[in-house]
Image (tube, rainbow, N blue to C red; front, side):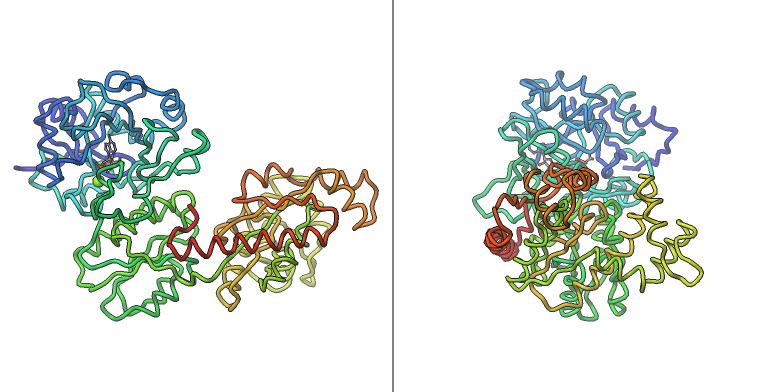
Length: 547
Ligand code: TXA
Ligand code: MG
């Protein structure tokens, strides 16, 4: 079969191919799909043949809007519309009860069907013109990494499909998130372009299917049949190294030989001069990592490396999906770098008891990184930080190079956008410095103490973030006594900061200080941290990384 190359102007022709039962390579915002008319059982059957896909693995139906849900699904819960409202068109697939008009070939005999409304404009134009739901798995040969460009899809499908519509590289790069809405609570079957946190914001509790984080045992059945197959796998065996990027890089360095292949963050590429390296993108940019992860795996397919080591982002945000793809490629062969090390991030307003909490951590042998002190140190010593502040805040430094704190303070505290700008500059320099300090230290327990822990990216270095909070009236009295100030001024200082709810909502856990004395709180805090540290270590030992 000759596979026609179609260009963006050819959407009518692409739609016609679908209508007459052909197979079309179709761009979506996640990955390229292998599309056919989802109401035509023969056409759907040809998808399985072209991919070499096991018959028990159901397909997703792609529709142009949530209005089409009722045509193919029954018992649709309100949550489906709430999710559609928030995330469609976009990289989210919902598993719903099917109606009888959906062919068995699509659902592989299940009584549910996966529904997705893609965002890619060309894909939408084709579906609309074809006026049928499009059944489409990812456009790779079964078992290979999903294609994120037309060229990658052609590597697998040239000669096996009628045409491919070239829509450029996919912007998301990993497949859609799949959430099953037929159970309570809803269940995440595959992490993808819409993060778990965003789903939770709409749905509340979301269970994570075990197949997302670990290998299924022989008798176990994941809810998404596709999750049981070894997948995305290059020819050479893959080992994923989790943990803080510095630590995982060190761990890989200890293991590599000249014929190893490396998938690593950009910052560490120089460490592996002898090896073939594909970078995932910068440590802090999960959007780029998602776009590149399949390309990296795919390129290693044609390479002679004998083994592949991959660094892996943490599980937050898109990291869960990126890590899942890497770990699946590794058959869940995952090694935790330095599982003994625990990094806690502490934040919270004045008077809540952060100092006592930090004393408790020190008493457990922990090392504290005081980011406020570090910032002030860097204002003296870090030339790139000083330069950047000097450019954005002219006059902040005097002729002798001394920082005029009052002047800078006045400017940022009277203009919110200027404060944000300064915080952005500081974060850009502070986060790498904290990272360096973590890497250079031999300690096993760390506390990062920062008022802006959650805004600048420091939280990414932490195993857990902890909000230290306290009842308002207690805080007022403590600050009055501690700093010898009036009640009115104490209240003013508190109200100038974020309220406890802010920290409570954004941190992983909360340490509330309602104790009568600082000593009593320190004891409580010590027990709290000991338990937390034990839990984190246990999770790391089992490769769970906090979900
Ligand atoms: O982003 C995406 O979702 C891409 C693009 C092309 O839309 N499609 C995609 O399809 O990744 P596929 O077939 O490669 O992966 C679909 C996954 C499979 O693991 C399948 O088992 C699961 O979804 N799935 C499909 N229907 C299901 C159902 N009714 N219940 C549970 N899992 C289902
Ligand atoms: Mg697939």
